[in-house]
Amino acid sequence: MKLFGVLFLMLQFVALGVFAQGPNNSGTYYKSADGLKGKALKTAMFKIVSPHTQLSYDDLWDAYKTTDKRADDKVWDMYSNTTNFRFGTDQAGSYKKEGDVYNREHSFPKSWFGGKVKPMYTDLVHIVPADGYVNNRRGNVPFGETKGEKYKSNNGFSKLGACTYPGYTGIVFEPNDEYKGDFARIYFYMATAYEDKIANWSGSDFPNISNHNSYKPYKDWQLKMLMEWSKKDAVSKKEIDRNAGIYSLQKNRNPFVDYPGLEEYIWGSMTDVAFSYDNYQGATAIPVIEVNVKPIYPEGWYNLNGQKVSDECPTQKGVYIHQGKKIVIN
Image (cartoon, rainbow, N blue to C red; front, side):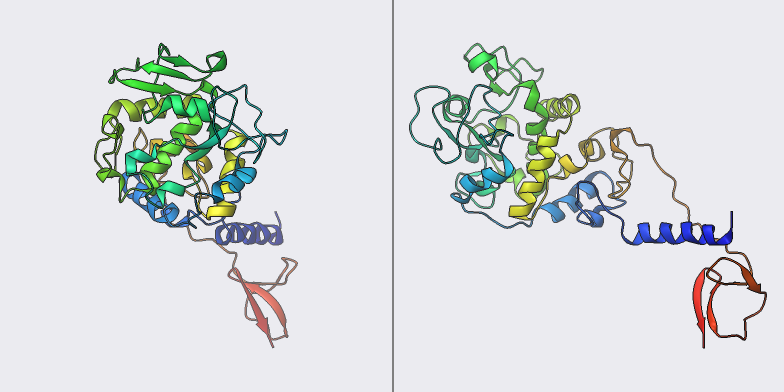
């Protein structure tokens, strides 16, 4: 290969290093977490995603038009698969059955962190539009797996009943398989974005899933279940689009959507693997040994066409390449 070609490739490599980009148009948003592992990685992510523009509670109605709109321009409801809510027209109000109205659902119940406490109370990441009746049937119980003996939404899409997942026997709400990963990644976000607060939350049913620990805030059964949900229900285009919409409004992101399997780096089987924001390997990564490599350049002076012109510094004016650097001789 001609030297010019080698230099061109080297310049490309340098350019990629300088302008390295994260996934989903996240740019260098996550750069400060690069190279970190486990607990340190989680804390770095906390510092990145926690600061955000706080919306008002009323702002959420309009925000949903950006973050939760189906292809048919109807509200994207993750609690029911029979609703066709129109934005604005069908929001809030009274309801007697599934399909009457949609409301603002704190998928991470607000009573768990004390109610109308900002910024959690208006954090769009975990507040989704949902059927009012189904939302009411859920109440404040945690997510789990159940036979749904207490309640099933239309088509058995969502269920309420005694938990059948090992480790807990209380009442839980089970979302449909289609959205279990979505909610798991929302809960990972809450554990990360509120690392400085979550260990102290103790409202309503939260103690049933809480470890009261800032690094690992969920009890083993809950964390294991959520990680299984996340693995079985992979990140979808819906989530990626919603994450982008949230960033346009709140100016923060959910890293567990941008980096599928990130939970394994923080709590799972990959806590000894360094995170790479611009060369992420997902949950299949293997440890990488980093070495310092100095580029090797041929001796001598070359013109911009890659042709060697001299062994010594040229006396003629011009632009030359020497030891990988562009040098101008006047």
